[in-house]
Image (cartoon, rainbow, N blue to C red; front, side, top):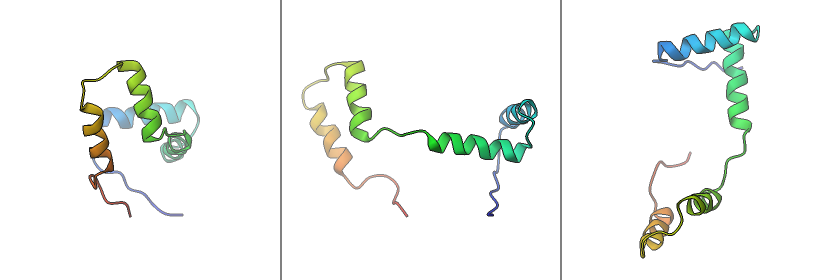
Length: 82
């Protein structure tokens, strides 16, 4: 197995993790793995799904905004995938 080290964990977050691990009768390490597995197992919406949900919630947008957003989405912005 691979080792993962987390740096600069806020004390409040570590305390929450410890309390949850204690309630679930797990080690802090086991609890962290369970939480990571649960978070990564959740389905993630595609950009189109998230945008459709946003549009449904917000309603109409000013003219030209959709085209500007589309241009950004198709641009080569953000982190490079490895």
